[in-house]
Amino acid sequence: MQVIHHGALDGVTGSCHQLIFSKGRSWLVDCGMFQGADAKNRNQEIIEFPLADVQALVVTHIHLDHVGRIPYLIAAGFKGPIYCSPPTARLLPLMLEDALRVGVTRNRRMIERFLNDLRHHIRPMAYYKWHKLDGGIELRLTPAGHVLGSSIVEVDHGNERFVFSGDLGSRCQPLLKDPVSPEKADLLVLESTYGDRNHEGREQRVQRLESVLCHTLENKGVTIIPAFSLGRTQELLYEMNTIFHHLEQQRGCTLLKAVDVIVDSPLANRFTELYDDMKQYWDDEAQHVLTYDDQPLVFENLVQIDDVDEHRSTIEYLKKSKLPAIVIAASGMCTGGRVVNYLKEFISDPKTDIVFVGYQAIGTPGRYIQDTDWVKLDGQRYDIHAKRHQLSGYSAHADQSDLLRFVEGFSQPPKAIRLVHGEQEAKRTLADLLTTRGFSVI
View (cartoon, rainbow, N blue to C red):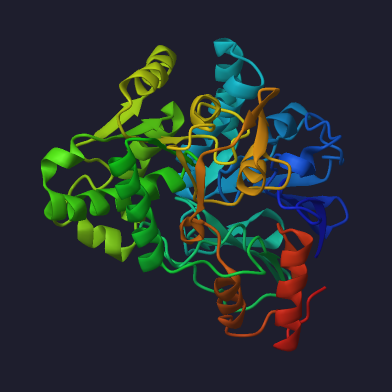
């Protein structure tokens, strides 16, 4: 077997890896959208490699930088199965429906036609089991701990085993099972997003989030949290529930009722419902919480917004009321979506807090907000006077120590490792560390 990378080898986004079994026979692992600087000068509607030999697609998880080009893949003539975990099978149509509606067309009939076609391709594969497929290929998926349904992909063919980490989750995540290292790999294709740094611990991140929430209560400002609709939003709700309970014991309910937590994302609200519906995939901690709180993603001061008119009226209300509020809205990198409207309105107000809880790719508005004093949103310049926070502990990606632990956890050391999905410094740092530990990075 060999692997050709059609994305995420020299950047962070656009994950797409072609696993070649023999002449005329190959699979794809992911088919993602390029974002930020990776998207520059690319026509993403064109699949730039031939599909005649591609028999199947394996999806590691549903973030758009891993699945966003699937509509174009199918339009280009792909007719094979799409293998994925059972949760991903339920979540993928919802994610791509939203992506098409926002970025391609609002024609309901066209979207429904695509979704019907997509569902004919999807083949859910149970976790932990080896599945025997055509051509002597065997496939196993195990939880990657990144978002609900995320998978580590193991492929056996002949005497070779290739492993694709997908995006590995951090050990700090409270809702999902931690990733477990496979037994062996002839080639491990490993993500390296945070290969050059470590996240703060869970206790520290909760303390920092609580500090921001208390600051919001005190200065009566607006706190904006750009968050991906899947994973980060649900994790924030879970931990905010705990924080509010703690503050309630400290200060009493009256103060808490003075602040709203607003989830302004129809997609996030639908994902939260599905998260709640698939509790069997939660980790042991969350399962324990369910024994005394049957709705850990819902609390008294939570406001969920779906309607566009309600979205606009909420912004106007926050402008006029001068009451404290915490807004969670997509997109996570501020590249579009409803969070942009909140940023345009409040980013120049010193009472505003902006909390980043995930990676901000180079070239995205989120990265500019993180690093500079002004940003262009919808073509207009905005000076940034808001206070900015980076809570790295909320990243859904494994950090350097998690990545090293994953590699060292193999029963037999991987024969070769290829790093993908990382900026150059992150890959270089991780490669050096792996090499000094005796691993072969190619």
